Length: 279
Image (cartoon, rainbow, N blue to C red; front, side):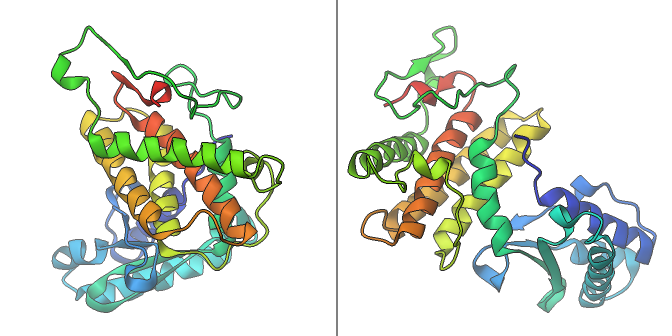
C-alpha cells in the first residue's frame, strides 16, 4: 500500500496560496513543515510567512492570515472532489506569523493501518508481512565497511530492542485475544480518543519517515536525523504510555505503534546495518 503523506497536499496548497496572493513562486518542498505536537495545539507548524515577510514588505502575521484564508478556501473548494486529502486537515495563523496545521482524528487513526500495510520498493528494501522481525537473531553487519561505521547508535538499538520485547510480550499475554499485537494489524480501530500526546508524536515521526522513504534519494544525514528522532519519540512513548492494564482501544493503538516503529527503525537504518536481524 502506498502511503500518501499529509505534508504533500499541505505544501502544495500553501505554495499555490503564496503564488496567488504575493506572486512568489515556491516549490512545495521549499515549504518546511515542523512537527510540533502538542506544542501550539497543532501537529505541524511552519514559518514561511516570516521567511517571505522582508521580500513582500508586509508583516508576517498579515501574510500568515492571508495564506490561511486562501488555503482554507481552497480546502473547502476541493473537499468534495478529493475528500481523502482535503477533508483531513485545517490551517490557522497564530502569533508572530506562524501557520499551524491540525490533522483530523480520523486521519490519525487511518494512518496507523496505512503505515502498518506500507511497503517500500522491494528493490531498495524488503519486509515480508509474514516475517516476524521481532524474533531473536544476531545483528547483521557489512564486514567490508569501516568497523567504526558498523555499530548502530545505542539509542536506536535500544528502541528497536524494546519494540521487539514488547511485541513478544503482548502476543504471549494476549495470545487468544483479538487485541494482540498481531490482531491489531488486521482489526480496524473504531475509537481513536483519548490518545496521549506521546502516541501522536510517535505516529507523526513514523509518517515523516514514510514520506522520506517514498521519495527516495535519502542522504545519510537524513537517515541519521530521522532515525534518531524516531528513537527519541519512541522512548518518550515508552516512558509515559502504559501498554498493559489499559482499555482495549489503547492496547490496539499502542500495539500498532510498536509494530510500525519497529518496522521504520529497520527501514531508515543505514544500509550497512540490518536491524531486522537484531534481537
